[in-house]
Image (cartoon, rainbow, N blue to C red; front, top):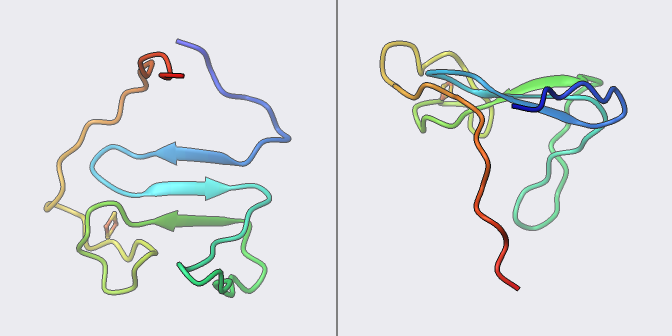
Length: 80
Ligand code: FES
């Protein structure tokens, strides 16, 4: 498995049984393109369990309620 270590890329870390941590240079927008104000944060965690009261951000509500062991894998080739 290839290790991700390019410091210039925005990095998303899929945490087991929890959130996706996003770090680097990024912005998060809603469906209308409005930007979430991150107050200078360069690291945030996004909810992927559906239980957060502060979506799209993780508030820790996943603990004990979400089960997914995150292990990287290869997607199948893109259809062209
Ligand atoms: S992943 Fe943390 S509350 Fe959903």
